[in-house]
Structures are given as structure tokens and as C-alpha cells.
Image (cartoon, rainbow, N blue to C red):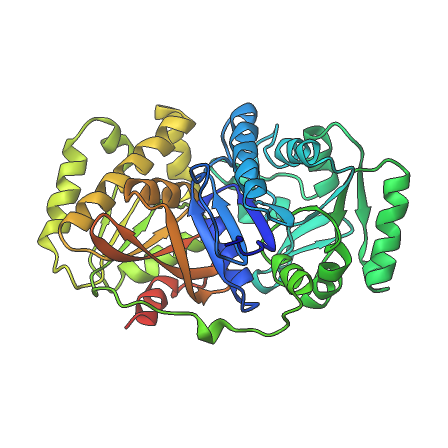
Length: 423
């Protein structure tokens, strides 16, 4: 029997971004499979869209490129028709990448002369105008992202950010062109291609812009961006125009909820404060975790002392000053790693003592927890907030629900709302 045609195959640079992308694809009424890590060769697909979640946003460039190309090989193997490289809607990366280097490597592998970059997610306040990224009403460089502990964004000009990451010229399709419609965008892309400009940033300030860009770029073999452009893109590729979120299945899982938060974003700080004000909570200190097992054992004892079916929170979320203090003592990488390791071990322990519903805040934390729970594939459920769905899988012998939240997504009541969605 021949394999079902995979309309779109995507590589995501972290796990929260992968669930974000899968959620937007699912809105189109398409079947979406989310793979945690690169599937084994020979693994087949019966989904309309496949997303491979990697943990490479802040990895060294060579390692990130190598992992992305391995994922691409599998997506080619299953016969994906169009390929997508997904990164954060705030375009955050290290000074050397990994957005541009991965994109160029995939272009070489696919034999593409040109690709586009569309990180805009208007529904979540991420927009691009004249090549500049805005977060809400602020330029990216003026937003809380300027103090991100791993990928501080101090420049809002996406062309200027992208240019040193790639070897070929960078250009822009601005909003004036986009307002002219699909043919105007395609004509401008053709002009830029004739000029030898390979990397094209796309303006987009609202969903109407995205609805034009989706069909305009659908003929391209390789596209990059945030998750929002994927919705009009897969609609153009599939010919399906409805919003079918209500039909998504919600498997039953035991009501044993735990929130784990490693993100230090401004919004997650508010979410942690709101949830902790009404529920049992425990704060993890990186400096204490780095000293050895005592702090982690105390956290396990605390967790075991709480009623398993009562909502509870364990967090390492902190303000920028506290993050800087930990990083100055431990080093940036070590400060983050001790938190990831602790949250991963606590997730494993929580599973053993009966927890089955996990909300995880932060891309690095989500990657650590998901790997610790030995998750290989996720089924996409209903969205809690734009780009943040509940997902369902098995961990060992247990059915579990996972919500993997990018740091700045959701409102202040996100954690409570997430748990209420499954009641």
C-alpha cells in the first residue's frame, strides 16, 4: 500500500515551537504528527503534516545544522512535498545563528535558490514592518526580549540580524507590495531572484497579510518562519479552508496536574506569580541545585507531600537580575543546565508517583522534560492559547497530557486555564 502524501514536512528548533507549529497546522483541519527527535529510518507517516521537534536553538552552529539535515533526510524519505524551517516568532537566535545557517544548509540540500523568512504571529503580537520586528507596540530591541538569558535581542532589524548569518544576499518584500495581493508578491520575489537575492524577509502586520502570503509562497519548495504563516500556507497547499479545531480529540487522562516552569520571560514571571498566589508552589534556586542532590531531594519530598490530584507548581522562573547573578557564578550554560536537569528529574519522579498532566513553560525546559519522559510522538489537541495546544502521548505504561508553552505565550492566567481545559 502506498504511503499517504505528506503535504508539509517541518523542522522546528525547539519543542515548544514544534507544538506551536503543529497547533496552527491543525487549525486547518489537517492531521498533524509531531515527532520528538528524529525518527528512525524507515518510519512511515499517515499524517497530512509532519513536524520534527529538535532542541537546537542555542546549539553550536555545526551541530544545529547537522541535526536539521538529519531531520530533513527523514522528511524527504517520507515524501514531503514542501519543507518548512520553524523558529521563534521573535526571531531569536545566537549571534552566529542558527536561523540563517540552518536555512542555507537546507537550501543547498534541496537545490533551492531562494527562501523567505516570515516570523510574524499577529495573534500573539509579533509583527514585522519594513523589516523591523515588533512585540506588541514595542520594537523587539525595546521589549523584554532584550534581556533574554540565552538569546538577548538588541536589534529589531531582521535584515541586519540575518545578513551575518548567511552567505548570500538578503532582501525584503515590504507591506506595500503585500497589499497588492498574491501576484504582486510573487512578481517581487521573482525580481529579487533575478537579482540573485536568496534570503527574503516578509513584512506582515495582521492576519490579512498572512492570508496573502500563504498562497503567494505556496509554490516554493522551502519556506522558513514562525508558526502563524503555516496556517494559510497549508490551506493553500491542501485546498482546505475551514477551521476545524473543535473536532480535535481530547483523550482522557488522570487528573493529576503539575506545572513545571523554567522560563524567565516577562510573561512567565507574571504567570508564575498568579498561579503561585493560589496553589502550592516550590521555587528552585540554580545555585542550590549546583551544589548537589540535597535541593533536588527536598523538591521531591515536597512534591510527594502534596495531594497528587491538586494543582501545584515547581519553578525556577526568576527576574533578570537573579538570572544574571546565577549566570555570573555558574556560567550561562551551567546555570541553565542545572535547572533543565532538575526539572527533567522531577518530571520523571512525578510520573512515578502518579502525575499524568504536565504544563511546562520554556523551550529549553520543555525539551528537557519531554526527553526525560521518553516521549517520541505527540497527538495535537485543543489550543489553550494561540499556539499552545494540549498534546497527548504515552510515557512508559502511562497515558499523559503535555502542554509545552513558549515563554512569552499566553496571558497571566494561562496555567490555571490550561488545567481547566481538561476538567
